[in-house]
Amino acid sequence: MGKPIHQYHHKKAVDKFEFIDKWLPAHYTTSVNIILKEEKKDPAYIRRVKNRRMIDAPVIDALYKVSLFNKIQVEK
Image (cartoon, rainbow, N blue to C red; front, side, top):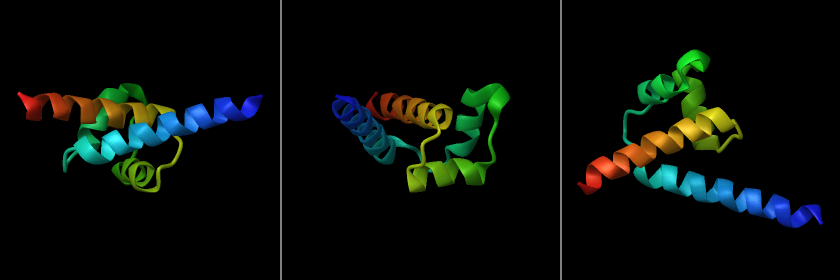
């Protein structure tokens, strides 16, 4: 019974990372830290989360928001 939930969350995380890979701009660590505000992370750590697809929900959400903002700007 727990397996479908795990698969759902795994698919959702994979979809988020695919979106991030497609739409994240070249320079993104400063923007991610602006979104994180009080929980600022080292730029090397942010790049590690993105490249190794580590599970750090606040950083992943910030990466997703930066990617979404970039997509909106590019499509206009």
